Structure formats: structure tokens, C-alpha cells
Image (cartoon, rainbow, N blue to C red; front, side, top):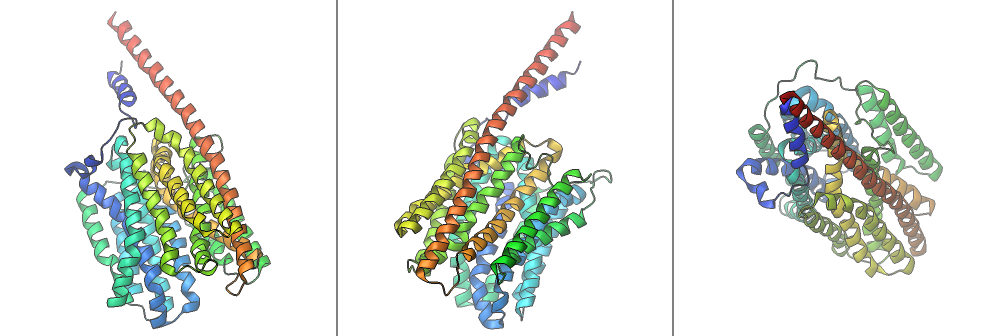
Length: 504
């Protein structure tokens, strides 16, 4: 008879994600260093994005290369996705500590290359290293959340990371603009170096060194990663195509490559994706569709909303940027409120509200363009931010919970990677939609209105698909939870019966 097994079953029933954690626990000595480390890992990604975006125009004025400006974002995104895709394999092979430190060194090397660059190609080389290093860091930090924190505190950790993103949205452009204006764009680029040094020191302090057995290490699927990278790069390149037919062909080819790569990965002995990824009969599969489709739909606002506010409604850059800040504020405030809810079951049920609010917000942007009423933009942005805030943290936690234990690292690391892929694919689809409507910088106001309307219609349709998957995810998760609770109860009862029989 195994009394330990019975004890573990009862413990799982009594202490699960339903228990309530408090915000103050994140600041206690046992969790403070871990909280700061993971938030700083996210901050490197978030602030770097805003620092570079703000300082790059000044850099171009100094060293030239305006025609390569978009590639600074494209290459960073592509290699961040690749870094995230390989992160779980690296963590299994070298341990979290070694992987994070090496990735931080790669990130710092890229930052130094970009900071000391004398031409745009050198900046692009630095962005490649930055993207790859930060993609690994973000993915491994996600994978460490369930390892460093008990389930009751996971929602609070995601709430803390939402605060980091809000601070980046506000403080990133402000700090970078101030440093660029009063010192130089190189100083703005270099701010990441001391932050990375602090991150490495914290990793050394809180992440234990692991002895990785030879049997546990997994080969890195370089061929599949190369194919995935080529597909993502082709998606980004498709947005720069000179003709619509060429753009359609490039985007269709890229999506076909990625679809084939997913199919090949499912049959591989050492897969990149967690088992059940994108399956329609499992909560993990449908949940990952939500993780992909929500950013894919929201990319419409990220790419075209600020442009539309400036060129259609004659907003200043600062006023137009306020709409993005409003979305970030809404996301963060809602995430904090949801993370403060005591009931885990209620938080899971609210997941389906996220895609619904996103659809409502995108429909509002569509109506705003159709009616030429800019005042509808702001409540729509609040709804979009609330949609992510109400669902994103809990959805991420649920994806970890419904994954087999041996697959949890893959799932956790895959979440930020899939989010980035969603934005990349969404930007390409929005670009194709706008170009089909004749959108360019010389287009008339009527043409711009038509293009923006088409973009937001397509985005609303995509968000409606994410709503379907959100509803299905909550339903499948509820069924799975019921089966697991019933099975555990049966095992516990059986164990108790065996105790009685043996005692007799």
C-alpha cells in the first residue's frame, strides 16, 4: 500500500490553483528576487522595443539607411520568434540558469553592435542578436513561472508583468526620447546593457544550477527552425512587395510553409510544439488558437490606427500615441483586477470575455472609420485593452495547467513566441488588405478611409474566430477539470478502501 500516493492525491485536491494568493506575497523575501527577475526579463523585451523604435529615426539621420528602417523591426521579430521556439530545448539541454545567462550575453553583444554601429547594416546585425537573445529570455522566463511560484501566485505574476508592459508603453518612449535628445541615440540603445547586467546577477542569485543528464538533453531541430524562420521572414517580406499579386503569393507561400512545419513537427520524435498544440478537441489546442488569433487581430490597430489618426483625423503624433497608451492602461488595470479575484474558476470563465471585448473594440474602430467619428476610437481602445487584460494572464496559466508535466516547459516557452508570430502574421494580412484597397502614402482621404475600414472589418472577423476558440477552450477545460477531479476522488477512495482491507 502506498500512503504517500494517497497523501499526494489529497494534497492535489486541496491545494490547487483555486487557492487565493496575495499581492504582498510577491514582495516577501521568498519570492521578491524571483518576481524582480522575471519582470526584468519581460522589461528587457518591452523597453527595448520602445527604446529602439523611438531612437531609430535619429540614428538613420546620423548614419543613413532609411530604406532599411523596417528591417530593424523585421529581423528582431523573426529572430525573437526563433529564439522562443528553441528556448525549451535549450532549457532542457543546458538548464534554465545557463540558458538565461548565455541568452543575456547574446542580447548584450547585439546591443553593443547596434550601439557602436556606423551603418544601418551593422545596426541590423545587432538587432539579429538582440532578437534571438531576448526571444530566449522571454520564453524561459515564462517557463520558470510555474517552477518559481505556487499556482495561487501565478495570476499575480502575470498581473505584475502587465504593469511592466504599461510602464514600458509610458516610460519607454519618454526615456528614450529624453536620452536621445540630450545625449545621443547611441546612449538610448545602450540603456539595455546595465539592465541586462542586473538581470544576469539576479539569475545567478535565484535560479539554481542544474545537472543535466545526457539522456535528458534533446537535439535542437535546426532544420525545422530554419524552415519556420524562413516562413516568418517571408511573411514580413510580403508586406514590402511592390505589387498585390506578389504580396498574395509571398503570404500564401509563407503560411503554407508554416502549416507544413507544424504538421512535420507533430510527427517528429523531438518536437518544438507541445503535444496537442492546435488540436480542436483539447483545451491546450484551442487555447493556443486564442493566443495566436487575438494578437493577429489586434495587429490591425498596432499597424494602422495611429497612422489613421494622424492622416485621416489630423491628430498630432503625441495625441495619436495616446490611443496606444490608453489600450496599455486598460490592459494593465484589467489584468490587475482579474488577478485579484479570489476564485480561480471565475478567472477561467472570464477567458471567453477577452475575445468578446476584443471583437467589440475592433467593431467600434470599424464603425468609427465608417462614420468618420474619431471619438469612438478611445472607448474602442479601452475595450481592446480590457479584452487582453481580462483573459491573457489566466489563459497563459491555463495553458500550463492543461499541459502534461513533461510538456510544460514547451508550452510556457511557446506562449510569447506564438504571440509574436500572431502580430507578424496579422501585420502581413492587414498590409495585404490595405494594399488591395489602394492604400499608400499618396492615397486620397477617401481611399484611406476605405482601406482602414477594410482592415478593421477583417480584424473583427479574425477576433470573432478567437471568440469561438475562447468559448470552446473554457468548455473543454471545464470538462477536463471535472474528469480529473472525479478520477482523483475515485483513486483516493480506492486507496482508503485498500487501507481498510489491509488493516482487516
